[in-house]
Image 1 (tube, rainbow, N blue to C red):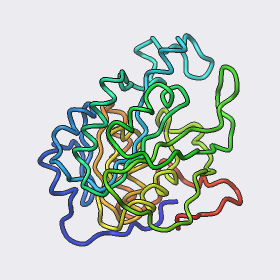
Image 2 (image 1 turned 180 degrees about the vertical axis):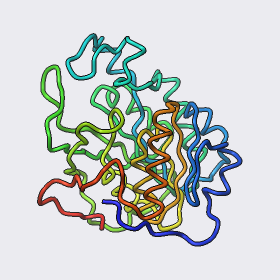
Image 3 (image 1 turned 180 degrees about the horizontal axis):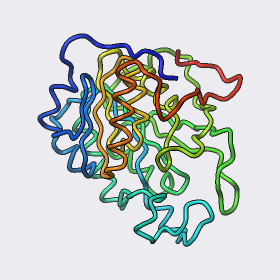
Amino acid sequence: MGGKAVRVPGPGNAVSLRAALAPVAAGGSWALARGDCLRVLERLPAESLDLIATDPAYSGMNDHMKFGHGRIVGRRSDPANEKWMREFTDSPETFLEFLRLCHRALRPDRHVYVMFDSFSLLSLGHLVRQVFDVKGLIAWDKVRLGMGHYFRRQHELIVFAAKGKRKLAHRAFPDVWRIKRVVRGAYPTQKPRELFEIMIAASTSPGETVCDPFAGAGSAGAAALALGREFVGCDVDPRAIELASSRLEAVSRGEPDPLQSASLVADGAPRFWK
């Protein structure tokens, strides 16, 4: 991981968006704002983004399951426990507002990828169809077993949708992606960089602008910069901003990715997005 990033010459869209974003950290082709995703998306100019690829920090499953004290993450209700991240209050009304703001910020004929856990897919996933043209459902096979109160979880799901019409880069993309989950990541629910590399390679061209409104550890941004795209993102958590900004600085300089030192593509799985 962390090969030399492809740099796009000249001032790009990420630079032009900085005044609206009011970023707390920025580089030549990336910018990060700290704040609630809804308020940050509101500040962006209409039709200023080429792709939104994100993994919202859903609260729904945690509230529904009434988690108490776990062996791995500890007590969710303890504000001093940093293993639980600050979450997105994902009522249907709030989630619809989020989707509408994403639609407003996207240019015509562009794509959006929204990740879901099994509970949020059932409770909120259907709302994507009210705002976007849903094109498909992608299964992320995490290869390694995760936690589970009944069946142990080995997959997550990604809704792929469009604003207008845009073809994928080529026709070799399957709808099951075998990429190992991050173990003991630097940030809760840190996602493999390769997940976002696939989305970005499928749905953008070099120089276009990718946005992740739930930036977390910056996996989407690291993937975007490594593939020669620009990146803007935000997060409400100062820990996330600190981790993501140092990561994006390193990747933009062509240094190894400090938060993912090796590929997480499953052994023998094809790199169909290359």
